[in-house]
View 1: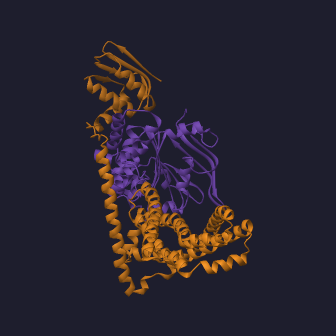
View 2: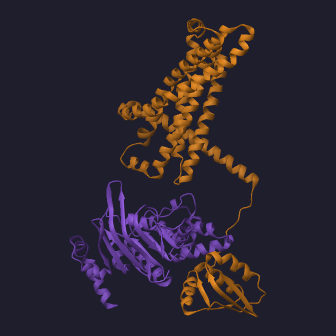
Length: 260
Length: 357
């Protein structure tokens, strides 16, 4: 597992039937990064994430924690999967299970523990993502959108993963909840040393948490590096993000960054 | 791997303490000779939060200290600050009679709601009669194609086979008595009066009621029903009436088809195993099969159709917002549909008997 690179994507090609989504995509994620994947709608951000999660067929190689996921055996894959927590865009909680049961699923599948212990672990994770204990017995349909996302995050964290994949974690949240969510992600990254890979559209969230990122467009990676590197890139679209009307926030962020 | 050593009141834990080792850790710690004053995890290679939770609880129980490295100290603090006292949930013991009561109560409520739904349909239907535009011809025709026309092949084959089987079974006994020609009476009357309508109704209960329930149930889960409401439409107009009307139109037609196919199946067997020509069969048939025999079977069809469609839709609306409940309600709608069809058929038989039809 040596080295600092936890995910390496090399010469990735993905195409659906006749349409090419990715052509020669190369990115790498270091340990401890909060890595954002940004890009236009339809530029294949989610597809890239799905490829990393082994949910999508691809050509090329993706190396996660030192294992090539394309050529690895099922056992190796399952070991990697246990090191990865995933939160999908729509939270995707099992609707027929309570929140507590939802979060405990992979724990119960992997080890046999007394009920009390499982409950304590689950409640700890709930508290970690900022949810109250009383949601434990509720069903997903009884929760608000923001709470569902937090519960999904708690579910992703149950096995103390090294890698956390988030697909648009803050979409559909109000600004305050989104900020809370960012704070939670930063905390998890700092305190538990979790490497975070996320797809995002939310500029605020992007400026708040990202340490490294890549911009996808035209079937390839337009730029990769720290957000600071990215803005120096000469690309029409990238300039629009940061210097367009919405990009004004970037100025503020830059000032804050200098004061650190 | 995890190792636990005890040195008087000091417990030293070494190795990797992750969730997969937690059962072992719990086992070992709980079996130590007490008292334990200090838990030393300074030399541990890796520890995750689930093990820390247990260690903290264990330490608390025996008022022990935890010694750990600087790195783990941070993690420990996070766990400590987020760990709350949990009160064990009340456990319900199996209450046999209580459960029976609850189940019975639920059934009663379900019945109550069903009659409510039925009433709503009638009231709304009366309203719709004054606004004929509310009947969506396109949706009705579409539904007739899907639920009626597309069911033609399966119903034809099924009734043909029923006719064949019945005629064949009957022919053995009839041959013994030399009453060959009575095969016509046997097949034609039993098929037109009972089997035809019943087969079609049961098949459609499985085919249509389940699809109605699933469709409306998923629309409810994805909030499409709410969308319909906010557009100023009534879900009954859009979803329920087209289904009921199309069923009432297509089911009797399918019954006629089933009658014909069944009798033809009988005729084939009569020809092959009893030597009755098709012409003889036809002559006898026109004597035996009176209009009112045929109609007394056909009259049941619209009633079956109505009941099947209403149960299918009702169960769809009864779906709650989770995936499991869709599966559950689809199953119940099929079972209830078939049950209702057979009960109604029995009632018809009794009523016809009284009326002397």
